[in-house]
Each structure stands twice: as C-alpha cells, then as structure tokens.
Length: 241
Image 1: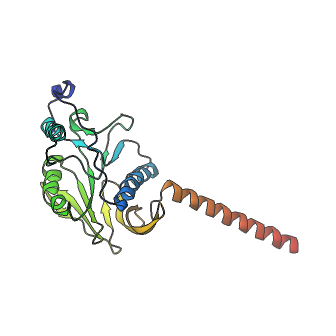
Image 2: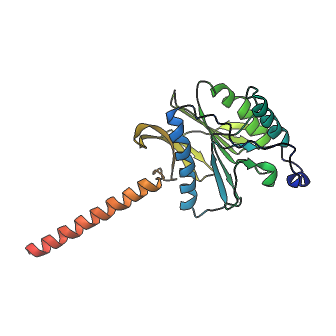
Image 3: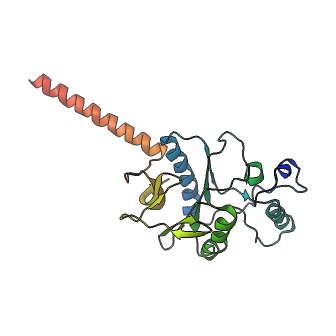
C-alpha cells in the first residue's frame, strides 16, 4: 500500500533497484512493449492529454517493504520472488514532466497504475493470471488489466468492479474497450520493425487503427502524393481541352 506522507521524504536505508539486467523473454516482446507504450502516448496526444505517464519494462514500487525485498534479492543473489513491475502500464492525472527511473508510489501521492498490460509467456502465464491479478485488484486497485498470450493469440481484458475483476466483453472484432484510455485494445497483423506478426494495438472508438508516428507520416505522404496526382490529372485534362 502507499506510505504515509512523512515517509515520502525520508531517505531509504537501502538503494532502490532500477534495473535487474534481465532481458525480455522473446524477440516479439522487445518490439511489442515499446510499441504499446508509444501507442499509449499517441492515443493521449490525439485526445489532447498530457496528464499521464506510460511505462514499459520499468519497476513499480508500491511499498517500502516491497522495495527492500527487491534490493535484498538483488544484493544476495536470491531467487526473484518479489513483484517488480508490469510489462506496460498507464497512469492518468499525473505530472508528465517529472523525471522517473521507476514508478514509486509514495513519491506519487500513493498513485498506482490505472491500466496494466501483461504479455504472457509459458513461464509467466499462471502467475500473471493469479498472483499478479490479485495484486492489481487488491493493492493497486488498477481499473483495467489486459493480458495477451502470444503463444495462443489469446487477448483478455478485466475491469475492476468493487474488489474483484470482471471480464471485458469483446466487440464483434474481438477488441476490448478501455474506458480509461478511451480506445479499444485489439490485435493487428502486420509488420513492426521488419517483423510480420500479430501485435497488441490500440484502436479509435470508430474501430480505425491508432497509428504510430511512422505510420501517420506514411499516410500523410501517401495522401499528399494522391492529391498531387489528382491535380496533375486535372491540369492534363484542362490542357487537352
């Protein structure tokens, strides 16, 4: 849980860990996590919002006790049992300009992620669906929890109702609406950084894809080229007349 306000300014008797040196599980993960974080920022930019933070593959500290346990595990070379953080998360209504090496709840007024994304793998699926699900509901009070298992192409969404999660029902395209983000979460097949695969993407309320900056730039270039071709055709037709 969040710490008392006085504790927020007291120095910790140990060093916070910001990086465990562990690489992401697969090549797909190395592309998906930064992609999703980028799209969260794109979605907010389209909505004119700056009061948020989107993180990917960084630590989330919800209590001093948890932070101490992480530090002890790292210092003593113990098995990693203590929660470190979600794959991707989003917090709304916070200072966007603050420098953050990790999300530290007691330095953020007790705030914890409003939306969490976990990319499941055979080694993490059980924990993501049990221990982490319970932590996000009971301690974080995370409003929405999305899980995607790349091995099975299964996308799941949960919405917090009281103390427990309820499934988010997919639309006719299998996409899941996020009230927090004002966007759909769904799957898209295409190329990301030269790799063809299924990717977790965000979609506008009308179902259209929220583009990356590169995709948006290509779209603008294509539209400009099409407009130029149209004008040339008009000029050629006028000259013939």
